[in-house]
Length: 354
Image: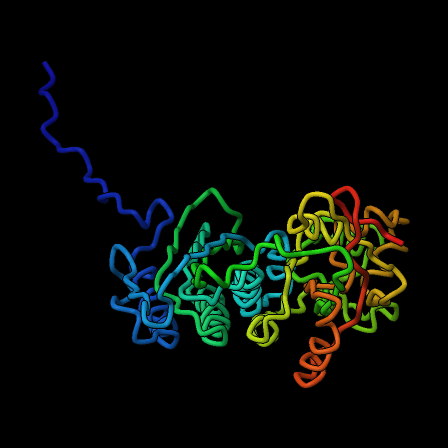
């Protein structure tokens, strides 16, 4: 009769979160570096440190006696795909903040604080730090505190080397200074302020045309673009906060539209009162080479271009006709390039291209 074996089974190694792809230790190291970058944006209104369950911000009620909070959330979209390809991660943080800053600036708001969400499959501390460095730089430039956020490790959800980035901004404006567009009238002048390229919209089509149709490489110099493909696509989404503040301080603005996804076609009508339309003159400005080449590559119809890309106009400011001369003087003193691209007229709430 055989004796029953008394040998014990081999011990297995205790499972850890790192075995599943989440490196808590690396995450903690990265958060410490991020904390230092965020602190550079702090002001006396910030009452908390990075790392708490929530960010604390004291509103200056002396400066804003009748405050209205204005918020917006957005992402960078498929521009991130170009960032992955080129290994450039600093500028997308700036893109995100500036996009959100512009979205609330058009309503007359001053940025107060910003929160980011950064998710990745496997945390690469150096990459994350570069992204937050861009967030911090743009926040500081806007006078906006980066008071918190979330860095999530999600193995299997994102491809190696890829991440997603989104953010939320909160600003403030006194109730009597809110800009909604309700004061826009027929005859008002449309001032177009130039974009710095695609900004953060239209990248799915742009990437298809440049990389699949034309088969350009990201480091390839293209004569029609007067630049390398990747460099042209990675130009930063500019902030209009400084010039917007000058125009609103002079009480010259009836309404403003940040030209993002949907182009002029879909963004300008968002601020038009019922019974008014915008007459936009297509020959008032020349779209930059990037837009012209994209249109040629895909034989894209003009209407499709105008509702997909900003076409070189990143912000539209609506000014009463009698104030146009003063607005032009302020823009000139600020060395802000601009052009009059049309006027407000009576009609169905839409953009008419003439």
